[in-house]
Length: 302
Image 1 (cartoon, rainbow, N blue to C red):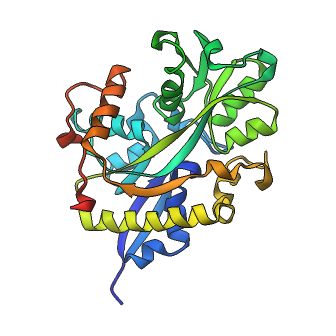
Image 2 (cartoon, rainbow, N blue to C red):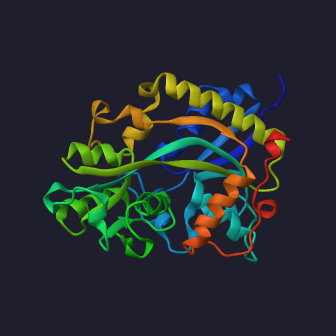
């Protein structure tokens, strides 16, 4: 039997990385000839999360630091987070270069949530009202995307109240009027009687360095595609990873399975790059001057 090729991939929160976990558990990576080691790094979604994923300098956060030091080969996070990291690694000296190598496969749920005691019924009531997020993470980017359809950009305000658990606790204590949450914390908030104002998806992107060849990436993405299909057929079988991050605050029955959505990884198109780079640039979240050629490499499909 041929020796399996070893790959180190990092993950943070289960709602974002469930296909990675399922591909490992179900043997889909092994079927492709890969031995994928998953490095779990602190995210903002675990019940006991510290603040490693909240550092203002994103390249000092655990996952990004591991990649920059060459200790992992491949990672994924929200589409705009990957855009920011890929652009900045290729614009700033001294950072290990990363390229966007695919779109997908998790379509993570995010929501803007309030406590009914605050008397907020619609997104328009959040004009100039701070919304709790963690900066440069999915809760930040997706909140901006959701809110700019209802109020002017200059009327959208953010506040840093830490991890998802800490944000929800701040909301319940009356220290903030609205928070941006991902699963399982949306379901936790609902179980505690909170109100969902608006909800959307945050598509994952995949990133890797030049050292990861196209054939290996293609194998990884095929395995993740099989995993996405398996999850959609039976989300309850795999949802324990997401439920565990709530630290016992909800049961499996209270976790909304319809929020667990995954899709096969696909190439990252020029149109997608233009749309999302210009959006992040418009918010001042990335430096100017990036191009599709310097940021994207669809070598898994070449």
